[in-house]
Image (cartoon, rainbow, N blue to C red; front, side):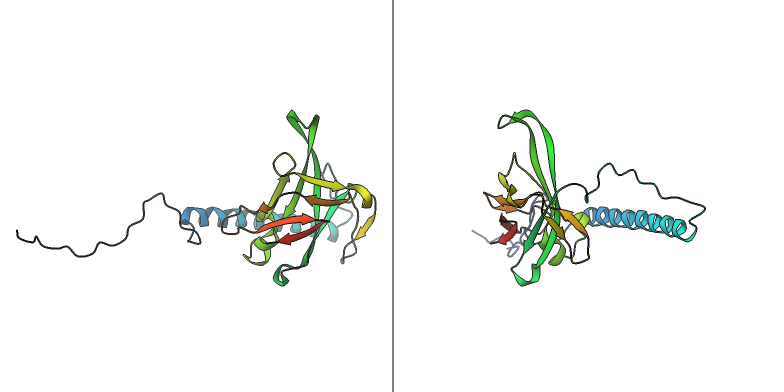
Length: 194
């Protein structure tokens, strides 16, 4: 037998549909994130210019708001992160009462807790708008302890809010934003990470 020309070792090739943990994102994803950020910056600049114009010319313009809810008038939840040190913060979160179909635990509504992933903001440098998490009672059971309900909470900036109570989750929660993977649970309105 004769040895045919040995091509040597073959290089490792990954299938086209394979995702590598900790790898890079596609250029299409990067482009869509950049476009969304640019659009948000553009809309903020327009709104800032409009508000400056009205404030500089109070007799010529008025600011009207179409906000149907005011977070200062509705109870909120305040969550604290005390460790690890790179994530220490305090955040105000919306607690939303949302209709469900079919009924959930004999009710036609469920609680939804809207919060920001601290790891996305502080470790990955994402904007708050890109770091939103929604915890639905129907998917991740949580309880609202109403003993502190109605208490006044004042932020370090001086804004006053009414508390809806404290939150406790039963299960661990996983941030599913690209490349984050932050695992946490909430006990007595404190975010505890693994």
